[in-house]
Amino acid sequence: MVTELVGGETGLPEGILGTVLLAGMWASILILASGVAQNLIYTFQLASAYRALRRRRVVSGTPSVWWSFAEKTVPISILIPAYNEGTGIVDSVRSMLALHYPNFDVIVVNDGSSDNTLGALIDAFHLEPVERAYPEAVPHAPIRTLYANPQYPRLLVADKANGGKADALNAGINLSRMPLFCSVDADSLLENDALLRAVQPFMDDPDRVVAVGGTIRVVNGCGVRLGRVFKVGLPRSWLARFQINEYLRSFLVSRLAWSEWGAVMLIAGAFGIFRRNVAIEAGGYSHGTVGEDMEIIVKLRRLQGDQNRDYAIRFVPDPVSWTEVPERLSTLARQRRRWQRGGLETFFKHRAMVLRSRYGLSGTLGYANILISDVVGPLLELLGYLLIPLFFFTGVLQLDFFLAYLGTVFAYGVFLSVGALVLEEIELHRYPEPGDLARLTASAVLENFGYRQINNVWRMLGWWDFLRRKQGWGEMLRQGFGSTSQTNRGH
Image 1 (tube, rainbow, N blue to C red):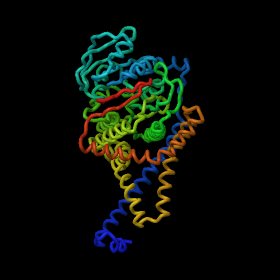
Image 2: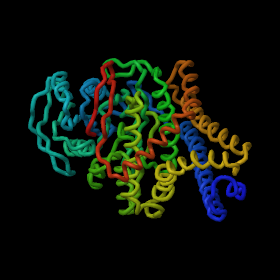
Image 3: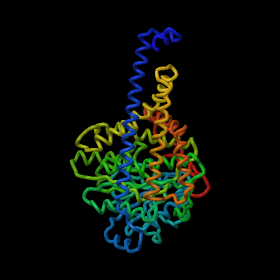
Image 4: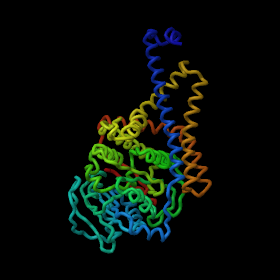
């Protein structure tokens, strides 16, 4: 084959072309090996997630259980960083204030919004300026004014100079007076008993647990009234449906499995609970990164490892936070580029943890998975898209192998998505309509033909943004919980 190519059209010396083809073949082997490794991890995750769901302890939301928990639960501050969230912020805050939990407060940090976020809150809750002392335990931009209303004793609103999401969360940490804080996105809605369920690990293992994450679900297509999801449904947009499959794989399978293995490396910023004193000891949220949710978990693991402490970070599948996902390709592209950039920032900032035994499984298995999946994964996948077809068309790969490779890749992608749907249906049953499950199964098949590939393009662009040291979040167009769209920029 090499001789034919050289003597045919390339004009390259046989030795050079042979070296190029040999390098390409080794690259292809590396790509295939990486794919096999990731698929093995996914398979083990699916089995581990199923086992965890089968043996999980479910807390009932009945009044008797509610009151039995009243004297045992740990007080929590809910922190809501908000930038240009005027469309949905009032519904979100009402959702938080109506939670079934004995002792909590809600701290909304308006991070210098240029829209009516602050005004909407003042009008809806009749807020007035107040004075309140607070420690400067972690750094943040200046707080201009605090607002409250005695009729809403659980609610405090802070108006501060723009500093980004991490900066706003740090302000919330300083304002909090509770031993635990819960970070929640401003476009999220929590289910009534979400805190009650999520706090279980802190109660079961109070000396070790420093952070707990919960499941994030897609609110697009659901019925929302007064800050509550009263009807679960699917969006009309196939783009949003693809993301539902992604969220199921990510939370119901991947995060749950990593929690079981003691190496969960990410708690979503849309819903996570932390011990305030430990977060302060770690320095709070870091500035200069767009992946603050991943970075604080890695910081906590690094701190605990450096101090040689026995600790735990858990994921609980039952508590649900509903969040809006993008329905426009341009908005989704910005989000995925930001996610990739944030993951790379965290990985390289804490690269000293890689394969270090002092950090336990998080430094070995957890960080190795980040390296394979998030750091080199997009590069290898892109090479695969280029080299495999190239070798097929040049005759290096036979047709049977080429078709078998494509079929295996697509079939396994469908298997993982359908596996997550099966877990959802057997254990949680959030989508009651049979038609919804059929449509999600269809989206699990269709996402492999274009959507997955364009996601990898966005991840490569995220790599480029990281190399250029790009800062900021970019614009995020939201529909809110009504019909009016809005632009969110700055976090």
